[in-house]
Length: 274
Image (cartoon, rainbow, N blue to C red):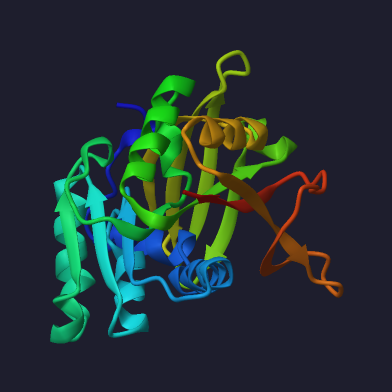
């Protein structure tokens, strides 16, 4: 067992830490994500979406945010990992009001064989779809997702890129109580396959290494748009993040465009209309 695989010592902050809670704090911002999905759907369809399906839902944190928004909203979360679904039920769903709990379901299902009602919106966020490493496999997922949408439904995914995304590098971000590390451990430029890890280091210098590992393919924006069209979506649009004039950093506002900037690192949304 290598150094990075050693479990944290008993009595350390890392030993006491909850990897799912750390992930949500470091990686997710479900409020802004749902703001974008909700507002974009309304602009495109001139009505509010009601039924949301969260593919690769993990803890169901995003689904919980959806049902908190309006009493007409319902959410379905799909994931193959029973352990993370159970964590989400205990720590997220059960924290909702009883009426809100009645409008959310977390299901242990394969997204390729989803057995649930048609959704106005399907989300595949945090680059989760990149586990499909071949064009055929990814196209099949997009096709199945399209079948799971209502007649005027929309698929939302996110994507990241820039020249830093193809490097074997490690980036860190400080949060309250811990530092988050994004570790791009291996990249194969011939196949586009990438191995990434998430680590957390705490105030007492203890580590929770390889808290999460991702073995996936880095898909480019042209590839994703082409495959979505091949899967049958009638319109596919990239939404690029605007820039704060004072800081030069992203401002959290995304707009549709066909021209991006050559930034070293960027994150976008892709909106695919059925």
